[in-house]
Image (cartoon, rainbow, N blue to C red):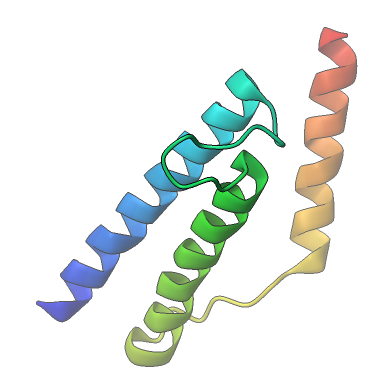
Length: 88
């Protein structure tokens, strides 16, 4: 079905975000990809936008009901900060 296809693309885009983040870790945010001259930062931004496009597609066509939840985002940021501080 089209819904399964969009969910598959969503998963692939999430993997591409992970790959872009990994390259930014390895080579730095400002390092350029030798194949397309984009920085790792721009590639990461592009991949996050692609991921968000699929989320919005699921919202509009398949009633995902996703909306930005600033409270949930802040709670996640605080958990990450606590874990980081515990490690370092």
